[in-house]
Image (cartoon, rainbow, N blue to C red; front, top):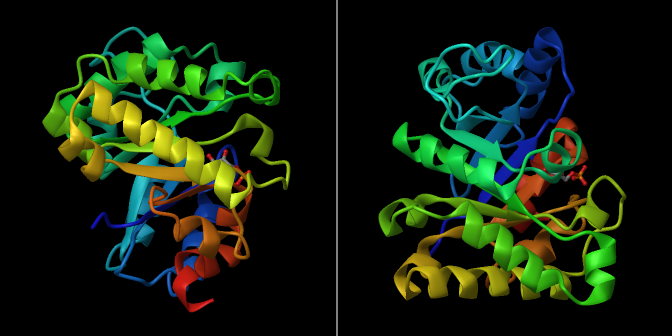
Length: 250
Ligand code: 13P
């Protein structure tokens, strides 16, 4: 059985002092050892958040990372900087990064390889636009994102990876994909992983759904056979995140 992984993606929200305050509010609410709980936070919040979560079940992730070891890459953050600060996960290839910061599946792939090299678990995002969904090319597009993203990733590494299926039209819109739509694509992603590797990798890899997840939609989504948790934006900044993590008790 795959352990569910419920991650918050704070995006560009929370100053360091606000971040500590939020962690202190959420800490007792997300206390649930049955699931992996991850807070993916802005770079400048990493150090205070790692300190603030000490002694709790919360793990800390970054929202991005560069694929080089070190050097003249002004403004970037290296994998070693992240691991030294206590980071376990990194979100890679979020649609906002693809759209606003020219991230491609090729650069995502380089970052994936680098993250594994440093023992950081990638949460690789994929997802279609509304136009692509309407054109009926959703699965073709996502399969391409997954295939390029995982190029050169070994089976043993892939087993530990997390993929977040985030339809772009559902992000920040309040429009959650239906449970059926989310399950269908997550299943398709698992089949794609089985084609690239084999059934054992497909069975082990964790696939999240993301896009307007809230306390009401989480229980049904997370009950689907191919949905192993969620990547939560807006609702991860509120006490609601506690309800999402405790979705079974709702
Ligand atoms: P929302 O939950 O705010 O729609 O954001 C989803 C997301 O992009 C998480 O990475």
